[in-house]
Picture 1 (tube, rainbow, N blue to C red):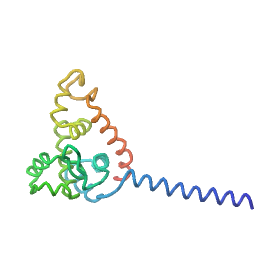
Picture 2: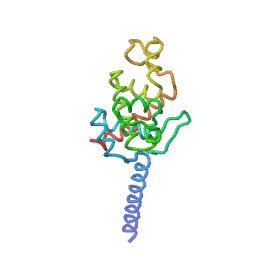
Picture 3: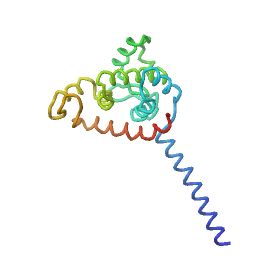
Picture 4: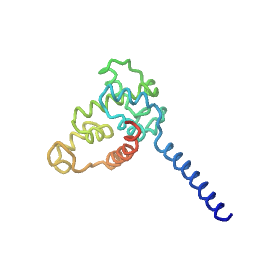
Length: 179
């Protein structure tokens, strides 16, 4: 009787732990907008897991997010960047549209694709997504940060270094979800 009760208690604990861990992962790694992410990632040739990772890092999938610096929506796009991207891909630009998940994902995914093509390096593209193209170009030109002018040995902004680490931490989870 005592063994049966112990086994039953152990089984209940295992079930509760499984549910709790699952809930924690669902909270930490939301899977909202999966279809939009997959679709735009395919159109703009970006890894869908990377797009989801950027969204999670930028806004935790909060389409109403707005940063202190003025970046808006899921992918935290600056209005000036969004206006430039919208012109490049033939979308009508309206700042309010940046709060629309579908619109924001398309703008942000194109921009990631553009940055990846510009630098021909995913790490540099992510650094530029966070810190700006001009900053990354100046880091590459500075021997303190780049020995070859093509890659970064050191990221001078703590925020950008931390951002990159968060994106890749998220990526390790999402790469198994977006196959």
